[in-house]
Image (cartoon, rainbow, N blue to C red; front, top):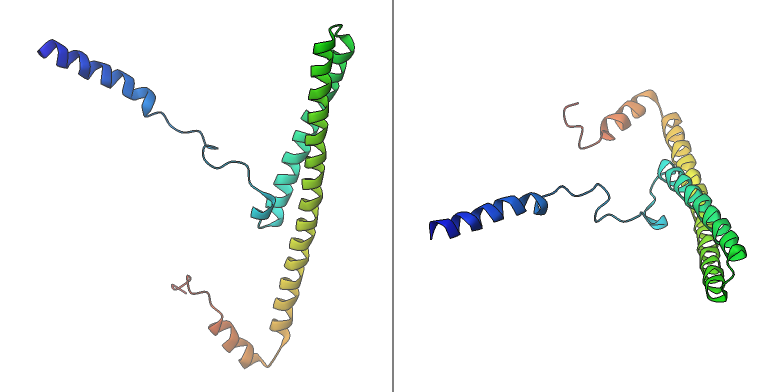
Amino acid sequence: MNKITLAIASVLILSSNHTLAAKPEWAGKGKPDIEQVKSVSDAENMESEIESTEEELDQLIEQKKEKAKKSKNKKEKQKFEDDVESLEQEREELEESKEKLEEKKAGLEKQQQKKSEQERKEMDKGSDTGQQKREENSKKWWKFWE
């Protein structure tokens, strides 16, 4: 009886290392969507990711085209051509998302510019005492120690 429980306990202990392994950083997050981009730096990061995947797709397309030219079997040739078509469709979708991202980036930059202009206009308005009162009232609520 003790041998059986000892064997079961040892098996459970040894197998628990695999079940308690750490998750990779990207697990459960997925790739960010264009709508999730909130700042210009996020847009630039996503743009660089899109460009790198675009380059990878171009390389894959070239490889598949070369393999299609070299293959003598019609079925293999057809398979490579189908792969090339699907990769080209992916590239087109990637280009569309890149255009959307550029529009979003331009909008974010414009919004940031308007915000900075508004802050400048507020600073210039009113007298010195009015500006001081405005600064006192506009302190952020999370900076309670100031």
